[in-house]
Image (cartoon, rainbow, N blue to C red; front, side, top):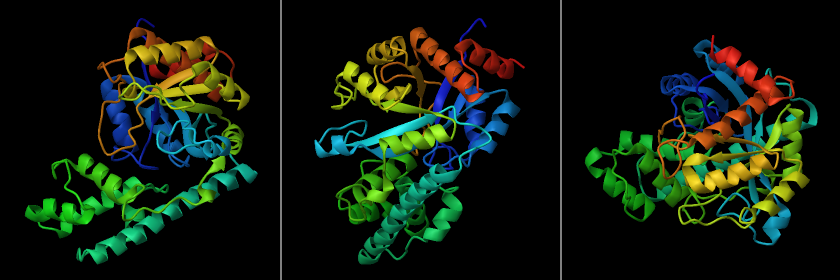
Length: 366
């Protein structure tokens, strides 16, 4: 193959929350941008797998099957150490890569996943109720219908972003356009920075001001919403996948979390947790840091892949880029390709990168 195919190994769909209208929208955009290998990576659900798989095959794309969950590292939490959530010590995002399709998860692991997904949904339901209290107190003249939100805005897994979107849509329907700016300021207690025509910006601010910690409709998660790291890893392995650690790496100020600042120590801890795979959301990082972290981790034997998430309202390119460049360097593209091939091999029950590469090329070159 003359040119390394483009890979995006971490994409959310409307089965959790996504910028995409539906799975077909995501895959059509990937195909149009020439991205040949795409990974579904929704929160707490594998419900989108069949649609993702069938849609990829129909378009000559190779599907990677993933899952994302939020775990709790109680030791880090007790010591106030940030892992890969910059604002909540101990909270640890984990992905699974190369899960089995058709889905095979059963038994206790399936029950644990269903329970934590239900608890996550209940937390959003509690926030919806509290948000309606805020709307009543502000005499907004409308309320949000939780059941309608579930029916129209999600395919099962609820996030606070669904509430922000539902609030924006309701406000645009019920409030005169000329009054929207004043309404949002009255509701949030501060003026929005985004123009009211910027749907993604408005939703992000509504979420930040009303639904995050300190907001009038914020409801903290119950302890049942988080499983220990080892339990999340067990669920991923039972589903046929590889536990994967999503690195934040450098933020806009060049800072790192407590866990990730010492890369060698972080790698040792990941090995202790039995995590063989890592990933990066490339728009968070500079090319230099991404090459440093991803290159070193691959040399240390970790499977390394990159993605874009698309789990906010903002629509961005699917072809990957870094924070300081509109594309990945040749070195990063090669790392991503090798990682995708290893995941494809695992997903197919094979062993080597070369076997995975052969499977992927057999699909995308037809």
